Amino acid sequence: MKIVFIQPKTIFGNTWEALNIGYMAAYLKEQGYSDTHFFSGFFDLDEMIIEECKDADIVGFSCTSPQMKHALQLAEKIKNSKNWIVFGGVHPSVLPQDTLDNKCVDAVVVGEGESAMLKIVQGDRSRIVQSPYIQDLDELPFPDRLLIKQERNIQQAYRDNNLRIASIFSSRGCPFNCAFCASHCVWTRRVRFRSVNNVLDEFTQVVKDLNIDFIKFSDDTFGLQKDWLINFCQEKIKRNLNAPFGCNIRVNTADREILEWLKKAGCKELWAGVESGSPKILEEMNKGIDIEQVKWFFAITKEMGFFRRAYILLGMPNETKNDIKMTEDLIDKIEPDMVGFTILAPYPGTSFYDPVRHKNADWSLVDEYGNNLVEGKYLTNVELVAEQKRLVKKYKDIITYRQKNIS
Ligand code: B12
Ligand code: SF4
Image (tube, rainbow, N blue to C red; front, side, top):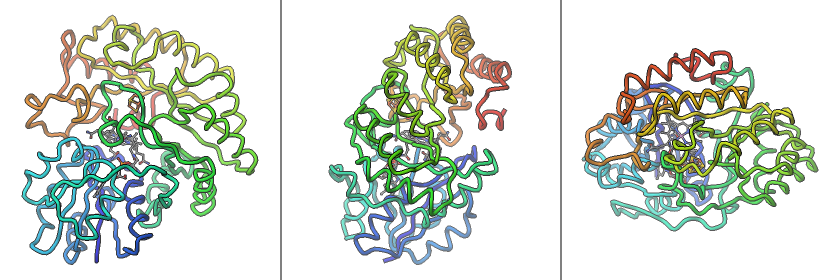
């Protein structure tokens, strides 16, 4: 049985490792299905992808909303009477019926993909497939990084950062409820953790096999459980794993003890959602943090010598120029080492998605770095984009790599 997985592209052209596909392919391989192939719209030409799918039995597309357009363009050309076209990922999970309304889509997987995809490979021809979540994540094999041709992403990272970088996930899910986030649609709000040893085994293997200089923990938020996190740091030190790493962290889940352990274990970078300097806007985002926590986190992490990145989100419905001014004041106070300014993107699965208003939205044109869908009560879209540009210019010395490149 020939199975082809496709990572469609976004028009904004930033590439990333298709670890979701790597996970599913490794799982299928363990169950005896190893005739799997992978193509990425970022690197492979459409004609080549279509040609390679001619004799495929199952073709799986992995989609966030901005990837849907390219996925459907390819699927229309690939669909034939013999193959079975499956769509999975965040967008199809949130809008399964919408996705199935496209004639070229045979089935949609809602939520976690590994065991659902196995069912399909074993003959399940339901149009919507949803499997129970895997209880023990250690049961999953490590993602097949060779199949997803990760070397291409590593080289890209090297060109951008002069470092060979790879991502690892230590958990699935996030218990928080930020209004602009769609994570819960795939993972629910119950967090599952891999064991420390399982994560460190992968860490060891990835660093060695791929010659990696820096590991990114791409979890929604890393080390949500204090005991787990301290144990992870202690074990990493014990194993003499010196490769540095960075992670997403919430300013209200860290404490001094956690940060000290992270430091000792080689964590160099911390990436935190600051979002806004206005309490009213933080409330509107349902972010669950306050300004004092932000100030405390950035002061202590500066003192400890971490490289700290702050994410700022503009475009909440009630945001005014004065709120943005409060955000600037906060940035000046906390002095992040890097900052990025995104604009709210009302993706399906977030609280800002409106099925009526956004029915015919072209999601391929929607990006957090700029989109024409969002405007607030007090700021028009044009004003918001102008504010974003102004801030990018003002903070040009510490702006994120991606934002520097696109502005
Ligand atoms: C890390 C991350 C990134 C990293 C990726 C780093 C990396 N190494 O992979 C970066 C920063 C590059 C990134 C980029 C983007 N991201 Co992002 N990202 C995430 C995050 C935090 C985790 C995604 C992830 O890889 N999870 C781990 C894997 C294993 O999970 P998964 O991808 O969901 O796959 C599982 C299932 O969905 C399913 N599945 C997935 N594909 C398929 C395909 C088939 C055939 C089947 C059967 C099943 C299946 O099975 C998989 C395994 O169980 C999520 C939030 C979240 N927790 O979901 C946002 C999230 C997915 N990102 C989002 C977006 C919008 C993007 C961008 C489009 C942004 C942009 N404008 O460029 C790009 C697109 C890239 C992408 N596909 O994720 C949105 C999607 C919302 C939506 N409705 O589309 C999310 C949900 C965040 C949010 N705003 O709410 N992202
Ligand atoms: S933005 Fe981050 S912290 Fe908030 S719900 Fe999403 S994943 Fe969790």
